Amino acid sequence: MFEEIVAGRADVMVTDGIEVDHQAFLHPELCAADVPAPFTRLEKAYWLKPDPTFDAAVDRWLQEEIDTGDWRSVLDSALKSK
Image (cartoon, rainbow, N blue to C red; front, top):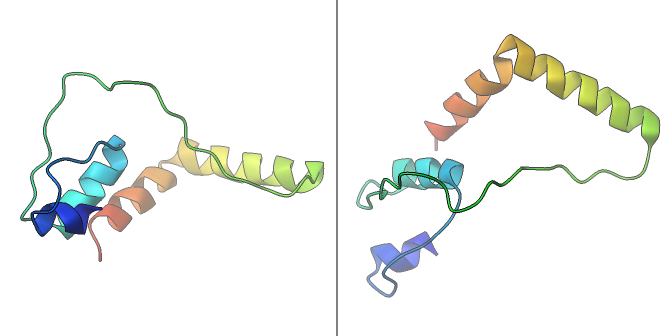
C-alpha cells in the first residue's frame, strides 16, 4: 500500500505507529503525520499451536527480553535497517 502512495495512486494510509516508523524509514519520500493520540489501543500477539509448556516458555522468554531491554534494542535496530 505504501508504494501506492509513493506512486500517487493513493493519498493516505492509516496503520499502527510501529509500521509508520518502519515505512517512513523505507520510504523517505513519505512523511508521517503526527497525531496527538492513537485512535485505539492495539496489542500485538503471536499465534502458537496449543502447547502449554511451549506457551509458558515463550512467555518467560519474551518477558525476560522486555525486562532486560533487549526486545527494544532489537526492535529499534530492525526499524533502522532494510
